[in-house]
Length: 104
Image (cartoon, rainbow, N blue to C red):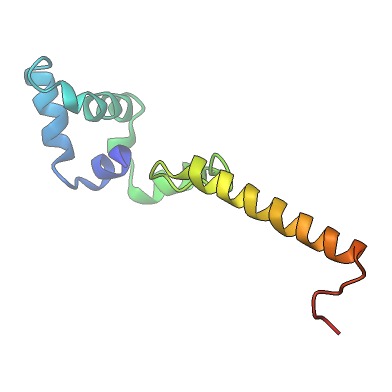
């Protein structure tokens, strides 16, 4: 989101990058803003029109199907795996027993 905030000039992103430049030790928590700001400047993004930025943008894939970006991916992934295994085992045992699970 840092890049988006810098490109849109939102949430004090440029001020955070400048604060890091002014005093890196005191404002170490803003290093990400400084670093992304530096890269965007070096690649000339700030001098581009928004339409030019969109023209070169590439969509990013999610790291995995269960990834949400809030740190819950491993929990969701394991719960989903467990649920799939349970349903698979249930269906397999129902079919072996000759039960159609109530489906006519």
